[in-house]
Image 1 (cartoon, rainbow, N blue to C red):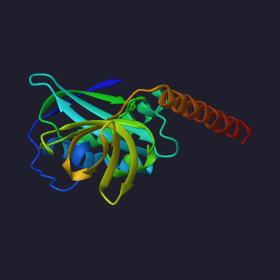
Image 2: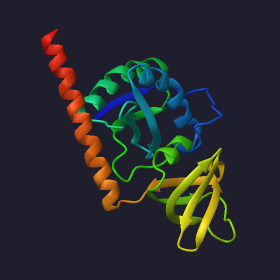
Image 3: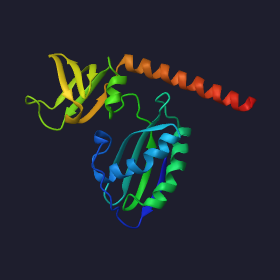
Length: 202
């Protein structure tokens, strides 16, 4: 879903700590800092924020429900209604922009160390900011996580990468991952139906 916003002055803000992969510049970090408390109160996790475009900017906010990782159209609408007043008040983006809220998708990006723990045993593609032994791109199965060290089992053996070294990471679409997503979607649908029935009975 999309909505238009206009900011009259540039934000005077610089957020230098995490979220690391979730944002790649101060403007995106600023957005996360502003909307994350509201999103968490509503039960949503901000997965990633990306600002693109020149004349007409596009602000993509990727989110998911904390409870089950699902994100339906109704969830996008609910979160959009909650954060729109924040954009109106704070003007974090200079000029006009299109706001796009979306789910992470099946072959989702891995933006937190917790994501690697959650999807241990699944295939992933990782890219580092700087070459490691003349290599920046790695593909394999997430074998485990210890602190910020991620072990990836590749065709050439195990590779250990630090989370802070990564510039990009995402799951690889496989039959096993699709099966997991279908199970999760069915569980989320059952939970939504249960909540709806309980609401009607109240």
